[in-house]
Every structure is written in C-alpha cells, then in structure tokens.
Length: 133
Image (cartoon, one colour):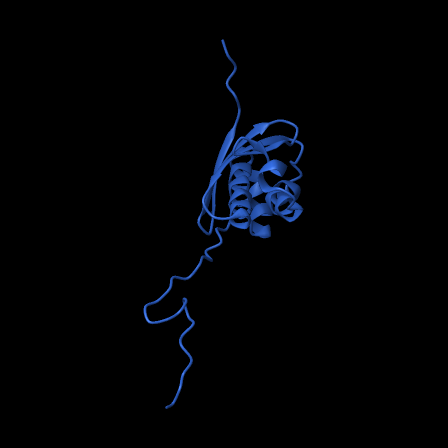
C-alpha cells in the first residue's frame, strides 16, 4: 500500500496575487508554477530573500521542499503572497513557529493595494491643475 505523503498547505495573498503553497519534507527546493524559482522569477535575488524569510526565521530552509502555484499580480506581489503562504503552512506543520512568524510580521496579510481611479480625476488622486481665471 502506498505511503501517505506528508504535506502542509498554506494560502497567501498580496495585492492581487494569490499563492497556494505545499510544504513537503525535502532538501529545500522551491518550484513555482512547475519551474525552478530562478527560472520563474529570473535574476531577482531580492525576491528569493522575501520568499525564504519565514523559513530562515524558523531555521527550516533545508527541512522542506516548497511547491507553489501562484497567479495574479506581478513578481513583487507574487513573492509577497508566497511568503505569506509559506508562513501559514509552517504554522500548520508546527504550531510552535507561530510566535516567531507573528513577531516578524509574516502572518499578517498586507492590506495595501492599488487605489481605484475616481471620476473627474486623472488618476486615483491626481486632479487637473487649478486655475483661478
């Protein structure tokens, strides 16, 4: 009979990006949408720093492989969504990680998003130049 695969699920959101994270016991590989994270994000090491921050905080970088399905938004929003999802999955795998991740602010969903454009304005807040005459 097949062994049951141990994995922990976490969902992360940032701006308009949504990431589903699967943590599986492994050696620290990260696969994003079927590609290695370097192939997916290109030459952006700052995004790797953002994504792996929860694992560095809990010293679990070499303990889990991370499989990610992410959609929506741009690279920075997707990296933030992945960080949020990894944090939630780590708490599911071991509730003792909650304090460290909460203190670092990784469990809080960042509510900032693009403000909508209002009628009569050029952009969300930019208006035409005022002229008295």
